[in-house]
Structure formats: structure tokens, C-alpha cells
Figure: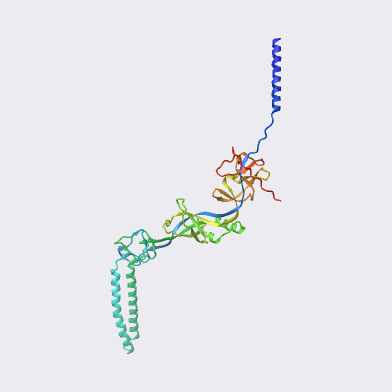
Length: 385
């Protein structure tokens, strides 16, 4: 009997507990969740200068290899290796003794031949000698005069001078060395380093893209700015002086598929040296109404196609597939997929999906996107009438 009473009491207590729980649940008021907050920027087209980074190498403005034009023994070397020399400055002296003797011999023969020709001319008038004898003597005189001229030139060539002004490198010979005329090895090389040439390689693909942009009207060229070139040195520092584009070659290198652009740079302090590897920043043109968005606003789908999320006029998230042109600093240049006035989500993309309602707040670079501080929501763009 007691067991039956106890079981009844327990069943009654259980029913009462269920009733209380159900009653309490029914009295709770549901709490409405606020839409997630995302940081956005409103697209405002602006003018952007389009530049291209290209690689290249420096080369001297003028290069002259110093070679002997006559043979002989080097008597003196009259310059300091690695120094600057002036055009006409004496660099080497070849022993002139043999050439002095040849000149003296030719001059001595000239006197005798001149007297002989004078006598034969008088005799020719009197028909005492034949015309052939006179012609032979006159030809011998002219030959001797030519020999004298050659001897003087050879004697002059024993003094080797600088053909151009510039910086001279190391000497390949020392005093006492035997040199020959027109030898293949240069005695020294002089290079003019101010101004300096920079030969830049541009791929034909870049060249075709540039021409297509101009043809389609997306790119405008300013002839004055178009010829300005900036340099980035091997250590990453910017060269302080701007250069000028001289010409673009018309021949494609079959091994690299590129054409050569030559620019000229002032080099008063000798910072640029021949053969340096550099990066050149060449201005292609200007886009007057460019659309730029921060790189962090762009993600990729499984196929690698770029996309971004925007907040539409109804404060809902929409997906936009993009066509990107290039990176400019920390931003992407968008050629298709966005229009001015749209609000692009910069931060908070990971907590929203397309179609979801959100609260758009202005993006502050370097600041928190959400949290304790309240930010004024960005109003949706005005609908076109």
C-alpha cells in the first residue's frame, strides 16, 4: 500500500515539474538578433597613372677601346687606372726611334728627287731626255712625298691619346711590352658615364596590352610624362634623378620574346655603373576614371577567379565576379565587375553570405571593424530614377 502511495506522489511531482517548465518557457520573450556589421568603402573613380616595372641593365653612353695603330715597345704609360681622362690626353708612348728614322730617310730622298725632276724638266724642253724619263722621276717624287706623309702619321701614332673623355679602366700592358698595329686586345677601355644609358626589356605581350588599352580608350597617354622613367637600384632604393625614354626598338629578340627600350639618365655623381641590373618604372599612360579596391576585399573561388562582396541598396550582401587588371600598391585595379557608388565589403566577409542582411559601416584603415564602438552606418546608394 505504501509503495503504491509513493509511486503516485512521484508521478504527480513529475507532472507538476513538466507543467512548470512548459509554463516558464511560454512566458519568455524572443530576442531579435541585429544584423552583422561589416566595414565597407564606397567606390569613387579617380585618375590613376599606370606604370610598369621592367628589368634592364645600364651601359655607358660612349665606349672607346684604345688600340695601337703602329707597332713597337711601350716606353711609358701616362695615366692612372680608374681615373677620368680627357679627349686628346696622352695615355701611352711607343718608342718612336724607328719611325723617326723612316721619316728622315724619306725626307732625304725627297731632296734628291726634287733636284732630279727639276733638271729633267729643263732637259725635256730641249728634247735632251725622253718624256718617259721625266715621268718616271716625277712619279718617284710623288711616291717619296707620300712616304714622308706616311712616316709623319706613323710617328704621330707612337703617341697614343684618349679618343673620348670618360673613365679609363685597367691597362692590359705595362712599360716594356711589345704591341702591334690593330691588335685584337685593347690596351685600355674608356667609358663615358654621364649620361648613362639604360636598356630595358619589354615583353611583346605587355606591348600588345598597352596598344589594346590605347585603342579601346581605357588608357590615355601624355607625351611629356610618357617619356619619363624612374629607376629602382639593386638594393631597392630609388635613383633620385628621372630619365628620358629615347626609343623603342622594332626588332623582337627571339630568345626572350621582348623588345628593347632605351632610356638616358643623368649620372653626375657616378652612382650608375655599366652593367648594373636595375628595375625601371615606365609610365604607360593615365586612366581618368579608374576603379580601385583594397586587395583584402578580393578573394578567389575554387577555380581561382577573383570575386568580392558588396552591400546593395537594401543592405543585403551580393556577390560580384571581377576582372582585375593589375595591382597598384596595396589595391587592385578593377577593369570589370564593379560600378561607381557600390559599397564593397572590406572587413567582415567571413561572417556573411550572399543574400544576408548586414549593417554597413565605413572602413577605417588600421582601425577595428567592429566591437565596442558604434560607427555611423553608411547609407545605401541612391536608386537611379
